[in-house]
Amino acid sequence: MDARLPAHLEASSLLRRAEAAGGFATVIAKGDRDSGALLLLIASRGVHFACLERGLGASGRYDWRTVGPAAGAEATELSAWCAERRNFDRDSWLIELDIPSAERFIAETTRIG
Image 1 (cartoon, rainbow, N blue to C red):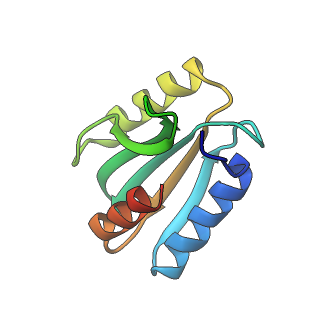
Image 2: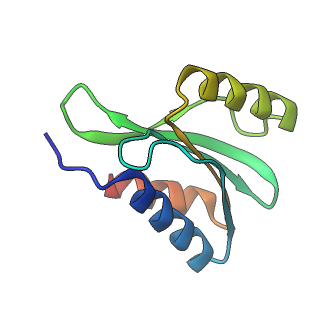
Image 3: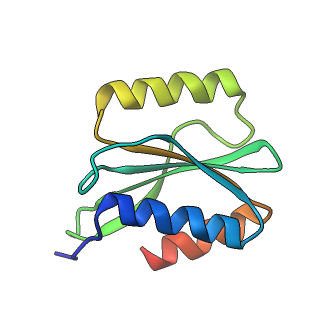
């Protein structure tokens, strides 16, 4: 089983990476400091691109997977989905990233694990 950084350190790292890439990042909801799941709302120039969640996979390794509303989803749909997820898991972190090169950021993030 892979070791995992505490959630607050992973969240901080993601915020810094997005800002270093010329984007904007904010924590919408904080979860459990050490073991909360990370949910990323990724946009590019204000248009929703994808949602990613980091979780324990069947292989016993942590990986990123696409979840939630599809690209181009409206704010109301995203908001409803976020509320549902937070009601399901209050320990999860909800992080919004608006970055110029969303596809590249996602590819790098999912490769890193």
